[in-house]
Image (cartoon, rainbow, N blue to C red; front, side, top):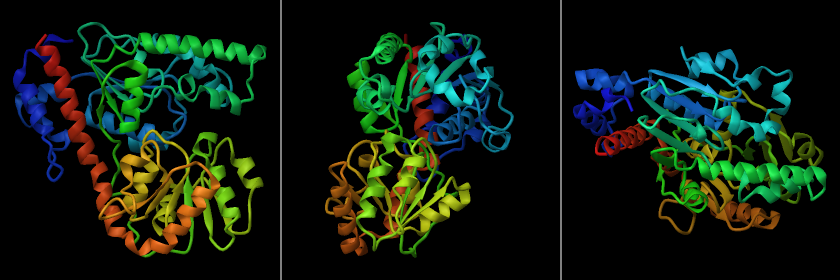
Length: 420
């Protein structure tokens, strides 16, 4: 690490003070330059490393927040397909460095299939000239090569699902058995696991986006992690106290999101309306399952999406998300959440029957029957779930709280290195 950082203990104290555990009044990162020592902290050059940027979703929102907190930074990412308008809004004046593979023909169509090359590609980023490294990782970013004196704080969205506990479901979905192609993929995933565990001790500290991911980090890497939930912009949210007569499910329509279970459940409840928001690999399959009471909107502009969720009776989600920022955003809109009781939903939802101010319902099994039962229970007792309690619950995931906890973690990393 640069001697500049360690030689200013007052800077560490100032940063730690800015991270005091108060949710009411939190200093904005841009105000950290109020004093000489604080200016030295805010002037640190930081390499922010992110797996890839195919579109602006939950992971990219966290990336944007990290860039805002550490204003003197450059972004390193394997693939960058973000539109200029998105960068202008969420990454103003930021320089993006990408891998050579980003310029391959038609790369948008098959970049995920290059996962076997991504460990090599991430190691080609030279970030050793920066004062510090912040990685935002769901697979590869954590493995960037740093020098021994560089502090490295890693925000873990998840260990690579398809390389670890969800390998078999991914292989089954892709119809990759034990034929030649299936064996090749299994061997590549084996090598990815070897690299993943070898690089697990690189960061000084790991942050998990939920308790679920914290447990996965402990199981896969044998490391403890501090939970810092992703930020939800409460000022952006559309608060809807009055609700229309429909339910909504909203996500990137990937198989693991299990939107198919929600659609199938509503096919058997024709008197209840469902709005499906999103596009993805399963779009064609899901539309083929349509029924008169089910509406598909496809991708919606941000404001239209927020208003659609805010007017819904409840948001329904049947997948297992590492966190599930869409669920937290729904709560910020005053919309109850009906979700599978695993993953980040357990952190987000205050379940009916177990909390004095419930904000939703958690169902135990990923089955259409459990979804139907949860919806019927919600209809019977929806008066017990108040919009204002949902909104209040979402304050636990505010931008200010995220800034505070990231600042505290970074200060602790610097302090740990200063004491060595």
